[in-house]
Amino acid sequence: SAVIAIQWTPPNPADYSSNTTPALFTLLARINDGNTMTEGSTIATNIRNNNNLVSKDITITIPPNTPPTASITAPANGATLAVTSPVTITANANDADGSIAKVEFYQGTTLLGTDIETPYAFDWTNAAMGNYSLTAKAYDDKNAVTTSAAVAITINEDGNAAPVVNIASPA
Image 1: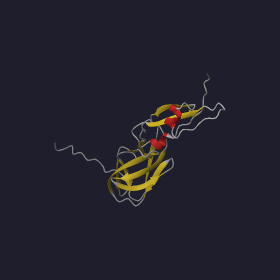
Image 2: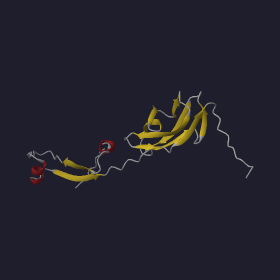
Image 3: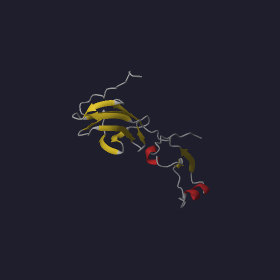
Image 4: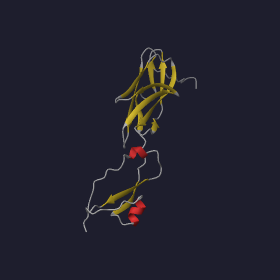
């Protein structure tokens, strides 16, 4: 007897990423000793007739997709910016088991813009005075999505924070 090894590359796991059950395959080999063989109509017939066929069932378990990470790096939480300047929003996004497909930038639930290349950034122009909550959504190559923590900013006339007044007297 002899052991014969073959190299086999299983299908791309990404093709099965939407499945929650393992992918099942059967490897089938035929040993041809040079003698004439009668073909059966099915694999089972060939095996029953001992037509030099062997099979082995294998299971390939696809690991679950790890969602990406996302964080806004600028502006800082609590920043006060001038209404006359564009608000440059930058974000970090990483994917441990793949790649980042895109990063979306939001003000509340309103999509401001999208970036598909690092460094991930968007210039928000014509923002009105007010208080805003900014987030970034990172999408990976398998469509998993993560939303960053919110960053609160204030846009006012000159970009200066309002002074804090404390009355010390009379008590």
